[in-house]
Image (tube, rainbow, N blue to C red):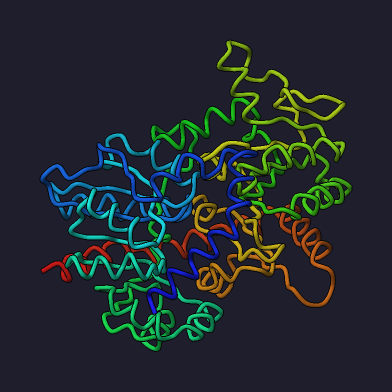
Length: 458
């Protein structure tokens, strides 16, 4: 069975190779990671005599959710070495930026072939592997069990759609789950699905994403995120915007809906000054979105260009290098393109309303937690299955507006919902307060997870 799985994995890799090569040549993706994903990790990550915990986070979202857990594991397992791995390049860049003073090393997670898995494990020699979300890699987990390495899935979730897919390969999934030392799931429903698939060691601790740091809302605070917020505010005058719509983690197809919505919003009495800050989910789309904005006719400015101008000694409000034909000084831009990584969470504090992207098109949505930290009114589209429990929690408390998938067209319903939130400041504030309250009520998953890890390590 494992031989068949490895064969299928190899076939799929071969079929995807042209895409990988295209992305590497066109966008610089995958090229740097390929050697490490074959298990050839940097010498600096080799065994140094200390016990090691290997924490795997797929991308930016998982890494951000893991930060409180990483800090708690370091405190609980004092003297241990902490290695963090990611799968995506964006996650890797963010982890490397955060590494100094926080953990001991960063690498890419290996491809799930036996030879690459063995190379990576031989090099790092972990005593404990902690994997965020339900990342089930049969060869990796099997090899860990053979080496008596404790493996723990944390913040696990299994959607009904994933459950149906897993059932089609139930024999392999059952064997794989037996190789996991402990599954720490987000909800009882996730735990029940895990047990139905064959898992025996299962705990429920809630969602780690609720344990994000409750940062102070002022851009004058001392933490790093607030310093970023203060810099961006000075460049784009965000705090002086009476109506600012922030669209975070947008996917292809959503920007055009946002621009059309902005046009309609600005026709409404009292909303003529509405501005839009848009942050595409994937860096490879930055140029594409800049081109779409230029075609929209709105004045706009790009964070990367303004930052580059400031670094070269020009005023921070200098015009963006790429802009609409009418031109736009940064503080006067109708649309701001946040074409940087790791800065979105810092600017949510300035929003009147936040749209969480990947939800107007069938991408599964993204995390609502970061704007909720700042008590902001949140709107999402109908496609939120990746965060179904969080969206359900928020919807039950009337702390999110979700555009329905049925009936009238999604774009029209989205625009009307935005107008309603932007026009009613008091209602938007009340909704944001309820969102923040949900965070406060659901915290504690990190503490529960670390206790479960410590208990399993005995």
